[in-house]
Each structure stands twice: as structure tokens, then as C-alpha cells.
Amino acid sequence: MLGSKVMGAPEAIKQGLDECLKRMQLDCIDLYQLHYPMPNIPIAEQVGAMAEIQEAGKIRWIGVSNFSLEQHQEALATARIETSQPPYNVFWRQYGEDVLPFCAANEIAVIPYSPLAQGLLTGRFRKLEDVPDDIRARNKLMAPGVLEQCLPGIDRLQAIADAHGKTLTQAAIAWTLQTPGVTAPIVGARRPAQLQENLGGVGWRLTDDEWQEISAAGKAINQLLDFSSNMWGWAPS
Image (tube, rainbow, N blue to C red):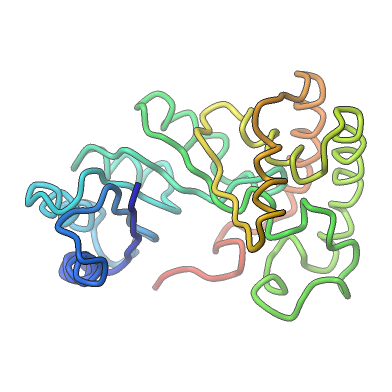
């Protein structure tokens, strides 16, 4: 499946798609997603532009990303939405209480990004000094006073992974897959070995008690977080 993401005014949405099709030398792509809702433009206008593109036969399906419950409702009132791509992992649970149930009820596939919290749920970062000086240094989950409180939950998930003969990464992916409403998490890989490990998160399950225990540990961290902007402290303006 070929997909692309865009954000901006309706004309920018249309222009972005035309440029994408030209670069790929295609007449149509499968999925076109609104990457972020622009706060100064009505959702109906942004999604309406997507619907026009769909009607013109340039895309097959419309998706959204980083949309609140209310924005999902407005989007669905304008056009058929097929996918939603929120950030979601053990610790970042902003959309779990409302968006995920709404998507399930309306048969919208949920394809969350950052299921490994940019490496936090791989066990790579045990202290602030471990966090690279890049976008991860701005991740709210790796902020002073937060990262340290994530460690007991990570350690418990590691113990559960060990009991199943799996890695921490695989257990974090499996937890996400078992979350009601989640269709398939988006997991990155830079090397073949990472891809192979990621695939080991599929095809097995945590027990219900294990899933609930990790969910509770993650929810406690979730209460510490500021959701006024995204996971990296950025919001569209």
C-alpha cells in the first residue's frame, strides 16, 4: 500500500498530493492522511479537500493523524475516514479513553506511531545521559523526573518478556497490539535485525493479568504528562 501525509490549508493539501503523485509517477495512491489538524482552519474544510481529491480518483482512502475525539467526529461528519494514526504506547496514552473506542465503533483502523516511545521501551535509555541529543531529547517521556519513573514499568515488562522467551521490544509491541481498538502499530527499523525483532512482537499474547499490570504502570506515568502539545512539545499553529 502506498500512502502519504500532509498538513495545511485545503489548497496546500491538494497541491501536496499532486506533487506527491508527480514524484512517484502515479495517478493514484492508496492512503492520504492529514498529519496534523490545523487549528485555524475548520476540520470540515481540511477533510473536505481530501474528499474532493478522493472524488477526483487521486486517492483511495482518507486518513487522519493526531486528531482529538471531537476532531474525529467532525472529520467523519464530512467524509468517510478509514484510518487514524495517533501516538500510542505503554506510557503515552492520550487517546486511549476516547479516540480508540470511537474508532472501533466506527470501523476506523488505528495505526499508532511510536509504540516503542522512540526507544524508551527497548531498554536503551536508563538515565538522562543515555538519551541522544536529537528529537528524543525533547520527548516528554524522557524528561527529568519522568524517565526515572518509567523504569519500574520497563523492568516489569522486561520480566514478563523473559518469561515468554521474548525481548522487551517484542513485549511492548505485543502490549500495543492487544490494546482494544488498535489495528496495527507502526514500528520503524534501520537494520534487518531490528525488523526481525519487531516481527517477534506478533503472533503471541501477554496474559490478561500481564496486560492489565503493564497498562496500570503506564497509566500512572500518563498522569504526569502534559498533553497541551505533542510528545515533543510541538503543536501546529
